[in-house]
Length: 142
Image (cartoon, rainbow, N blue to C red; front, side, top):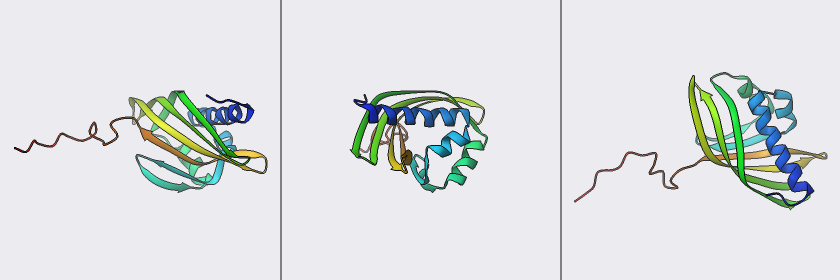
């Protein structure tokens, strides 16, 4: 868990970011997003401009209903760079179907003109580190 005022501030920013996504609050999300922001996850790697992120946030097909952060780790690298990492449980609707997602996320926050913004966000869906829980079992060789 966060240990000092900067760590607490950064965790609060991370929660504000999630709330902005849940609420589809483009103004709040833009205030917290570096331009561009690099995002990685199951979909690959992307360099996303603020405008592109705003468009994605407004797009349909999904709704974030709830999120819970746990096992939070915050590391301040220097006065202008910090990392926030945690486990997240997401309750969503995707393409009309309920989805519960457990993942491990990390964000790199940087200071730009006295404001902390997210420059990198990663999400790894929880599961077997070798993907065995996502792949059909290979036939045994005798």
